[in-house]
Image (cartoon, rainbow, N blue to C red; front, top):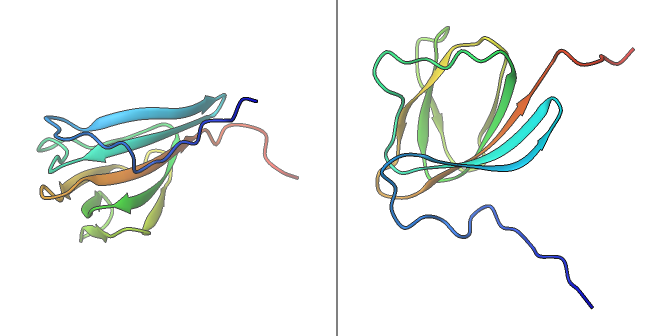
Amino acid sequence: MLRAMNANLLRPLPASLASEQFLELLARPGLRIERIVSAGQASPPGFWYDQPHGEWVLLLAGAARLRLADEADDRVLAPGDWLDIAPRRRHRVEWTDPGQATVWLAVHYDMAGPQPA
């Protein structure tokens, strides 16, 4: 009898990272789910994400600071914190903990599909 393999978002994690690791977990029309692992990385100076789609992000492990262009202060994120970023809302990663893996779950979604009545 065949058993389905279980997957775990926190295992395995890379031993070291020179750059962030992006792992696509699921892709469907209008939807992409990925695990992102950071270890001290941040967005380059002056760089802002400006995406045509929405992004719901959940911090699973580690620590991070996220900056939204329309807010004066960084959002400090700890495990369990989540944020829904609207399309075209400029944002950047200011800091991730260099002493431990920071693991994100990012759900990218297209808001152009049919809307409920």
